[in-house]
Length: 165
Image 1 (cartoon, rainbow, N blue to C red):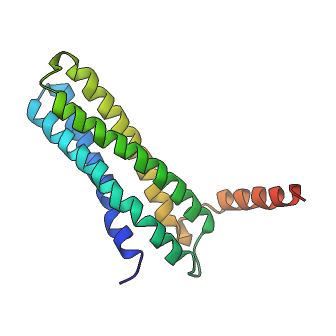
Image 2: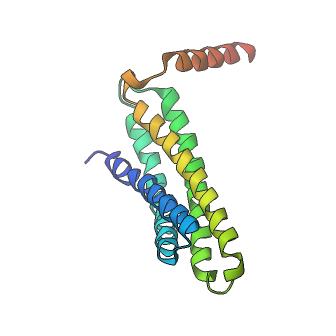
C-alpha cells in the first residue's frame, strides 16, 4: 500500500463531517431544535477527531509524493501549511462542540451564544479545510494548476534567493 493512501482516505472525513455538522447546527439555531443541535455538535466533535489522523498521515504522504515526477512543490507546500491551520482550527471546533454538549444543560441561558461561537469556529475550519483540499488535489493535477500563481510565486522565490547574496 502506498504511504499516501491513509492520508487520501482520512482527509475527506473532516471536510464532510464539518460540513454536515455546520448544516445541522445552523438548522438547530434557526429552528430552535435540540435534536439537530445535539446531532450537529456530535458531528463537529467527530470532525475535530477525524482531523487528527488526516493531519498525522500527511507528513508521510508528503515524503512519498515529493519524490515523484510531475508534482507541484508550490501546491504541496501550500497544502501542508493550510492543512496544519485547518487541523488546529478543527480541533478547537471539536473541543468547543464537546464543551457545548457537556455544558448545554448547565448554561442554557448562554446556549445560543455558545452554539453560534461553535458554528463560527466550525465554519472557519470548514473553509480552510476546503482550501487545503483544493491545494491537495492540485499537487499532482497539472490541469488544475493556476500557472500564473505558480510563476509569480517561483519568480518571488527566485528574486528572494538573489537578494540574499
